[in-house]
Image 1: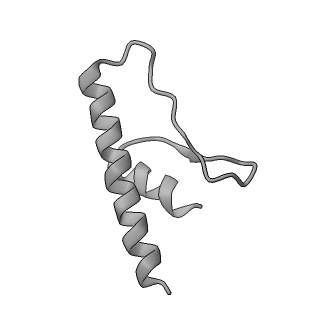
Image 2: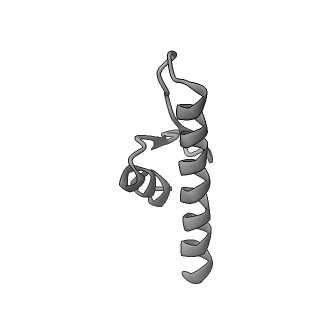
Image 3: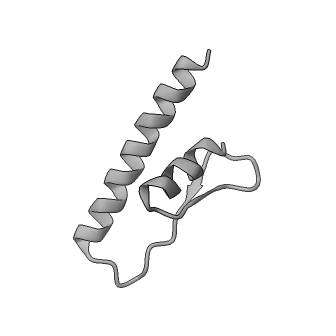
Length: 60
């Protein structure tokens, strides 16, 4: 699960995989984040998940 946090970091979003082994990505946006900022975070997560899907699909 290290690919996803590394990819998110490369995209400019700090996140980490759950340290208990669950399939969870943890983010902590500021409580004062605007709707546009939250939409941007969701877009980055979507891009990183798409990249991870492609990465692991081709790794087989």
